[in-house]
Length: 318
Image (tube, rainbow, N blue to C red; front, side, top):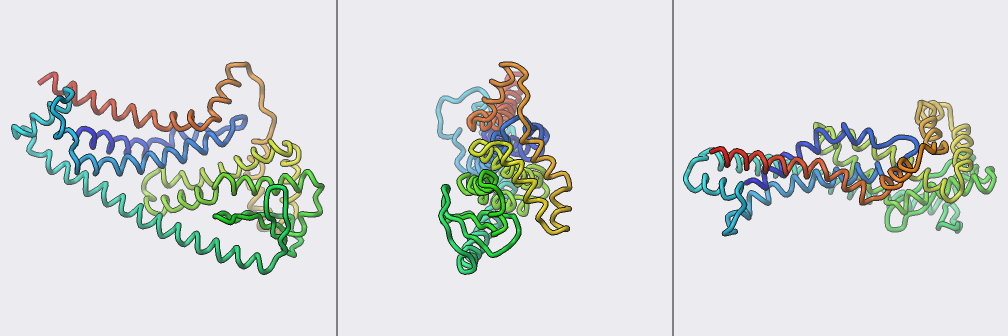
């Protein structure tokens, strides 16, 4: 029961408190891939903690071990002597609540993902018929007869980039920055991350992590793709591509893009301020995926330790 309670409390902490610190991880000057990894790994840990709670209640690993730590032996003794008559009801409630949430997540995410794959395949087949396929250094590009200076990517097993003929009016470095940005989406599986986070928001809109995670991940994948394109083509090329493509959009789309979002992406591409060796070391550490995953798991770990500590203190004072 201790393991199940620790996992359930950890899930509550991640689901309702994680956005408070995750929202502060992304700032200009830091690699957005670190913040993206932190958001995604926190959502994974949240679902894993929800799944682990009912599993621990069902298997009861503490009942199968002879020499238990103090907290577990205390709870088992209290169970055997009937000192906790409410414990079976608590276990049942925990299993029902967590199980119902897991079933909803599984159903909504699986339906959404299947729909996403069907729509992706249908869209890809359509643009292959309408456009002309050309090879690019990063892969395949489907060119459509459109004067707009725009491009987008289609994820999946046969992911590709779709671009308008107006993109050819850009100079080669700027055009390459646009295409590299889209290839970064494909290589990073950004379409899957956005689709799954959106499905989690649909499944659990009352959980802040799921509700806020979807828009954050959608923004962070764009910033991560910008950073990837800037590494291969230079910051100036990506900045020019953003400005040139924004000016060719229709008025409604231009107003939406210019509503702070374009300014934020340009600000993210600004040169990083050099504020000392320790700051650079921290920035490089944060950009690594293991560091971001560890940062996401730390609150859940501390929560589990706290629950075990509270049970231990209660047993020792009896």
